[in-house]
Image (cartoon, rainbow, N blue to C red; front, side, top):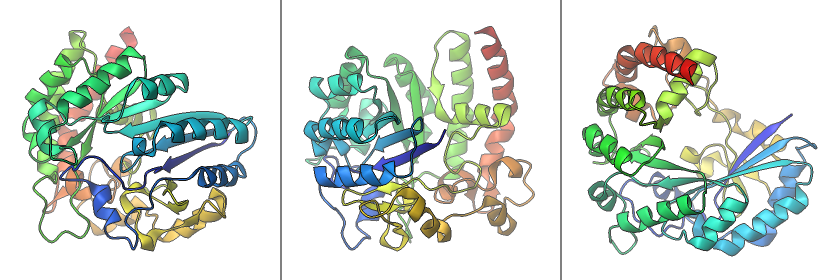
Length: 368
């Protein structure tokens, strides 16, 4: 059975927030056309028809909606998309997720997402002070109260959701506060997303995470998480889950964590396809799903794809004790997670937490 995933941007780079660190706005501003507007119904059908060419009955297609802010396309877009997929993808298993800032989530959206079993990634950067400072709306107003209401709506309608928290160089100073916030808000699934610097930045953004700050955040978070798990305060933290899956079971559950790029099929609202959300730039355009299926475009991405085994030979990662499992990690995240002035901060973090994490996880899972 084949499993194909595509990442769609129904509202292109349009957004109703003005986060100070937005990597996709930075990318969009570097393209000849920064925004392609709202995806049309005709474009949806042509994309689905192209993708269907590479699928056979019993195969699985996962569609992740991102942005910008995908809900700006309107609830009608999603209703029409799901209807078109049901029609054109008969015999194909369908799965959906959406990453949203939550400002437009209401009862109607939540009912639809519940009906279609859409996994929602809700962007929320921490306690109110952090969220309001880092993620104001387009008028410059704080957003915490409104996003918290969206989280309550998701719970009310029993929509499965994860919280996506961008870890900036400032917020990473406060692991205890963030942990206490997770417990207070009863957040059970969280992914901390390292805040990237701007592409080709000469002067680093104040938001951009540094590897040493990344390391220290998780060093302090791990014992809090471990104690919480022992006391029945169950919180799934994506990095810990990824490490357990990789080192215990040999499963890769995060793109780039072993140094190898994979094609994500990022689909802009005009049908153009890019290999990676971090590199949705004109020079990396693979083609268009309006004219070609995924299998015809994959070879175009060869110049973009990297093999970590080649990369580490020319980096401080060469000879690292974790080299065979890491291979330098994601090339776009190396300056926020892995390497800082010749030091491998990621290896230093693993030295502190990996063995205790694996031992604890094995014992905890054996008791479930």
